[in-house]
Image 1 (cartoon, helix red, strand yellow):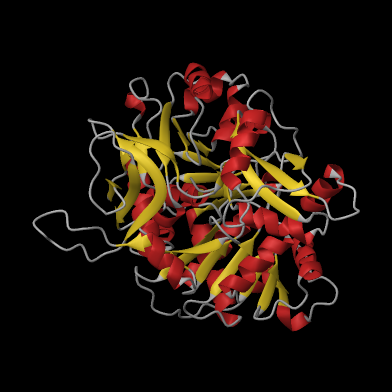
Image 2 (tube, rainbow, N blue to C red):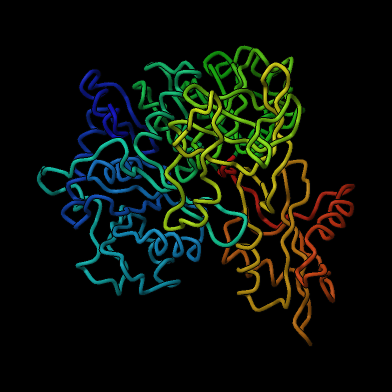
Length: 539
């Protein structure tokens, strides 16, 4: 089983009636899932999807999303999962940047997309899962989900484990999201590694709460399928709904990010959930100690795994539950199959407790950034020889995160070297927020800053100046941004100034602004601006 879709086929052959995926409409067995994937792959091939072509899936968490993603891989193509929280401007960028050939989405979402970018040059076909194509779309370009699954079986291109399986779009420190290219080898190795330390079995029932566009969210599928477990799909709405589903579906494994855990920790957990929930995991940011204490009290028999990961390497470290009492603020040690180094800028190893950059090497390291060799060369580099001058020809990923390693080998997160904002479990580029702020035409200058926040990790605060002779209106600006940005990227507060400070080079003085805002908001929580969300970012 070297290819990601083959792990589903293997379970279908061994345990054909085992439940694979459940959503609000019902449950698919592994046989039914494998057959649907085969049909969708045939349909995509009929649409002209060839080896390496990108297939974007912009859907809620429903069985069709799973089928389409794995069907793209089965056809020899590349799956591009798109976060449902994104708005049309961000999705348009992903489709154009990835040069997507086929888009699978809903009727309403496609209508939003056409209003934003009616041309979408390069898009060969659209598959609408819940209805006909919207008015104005050529019939030859659009088909229904049933039509996609109708072609006869056919042969597919040869695919090997080094071929690209998926592209995950993640925010960078500057500009729009960048695509991280992952091979079948990356994803299968990751599934095997994570499922091994979580001790997953075919009896597990895993709740998929996080978006599939987030590597941590997609991992709920791959780790479950790796052992033949069952996955229950849920688009996160209310915390109580999560607990209700945990009880009703007898869930044994749950992954979430800190903002979700903060909300869930405040609820009364049903006794039935306390008996059936075998483990929970956290990534996408540090879990607050108070929240961890509440979860441990509510779930005394549940194993809690604290993890750290990079989209560029799928997953990097985990803290075994038995270490929680001794080092609850640690991100643990390397997951099976990975080596984690802590290096100085010159590439030499750091001493114990000396801060350095986290560098990940091994089979989980992705292939780099899509169509961006310069940025790939900056982040993906070899590490110096580690034994008797033995060269290490493979590339490692240099995370940009500063960590330290204690005398026992456990790692601790210190901070980031770039300007990224970590909010609601997402990594947010300040530049991307600022571009949409300027696009409203309601500001002259703007700088987005992340400040500490008790529930979100960091809150996005916008410092802006109004155009000459125009009134500064936070309400108007935030209303406009809600139309252009997903909720987690909308600033929680806007501070208007006549002029923004600049440094000696004439650039906005972000360090000064950050210091001023951190002091200003230290004693009070910024005003909310409808940014609540499930938090499905890379971490």
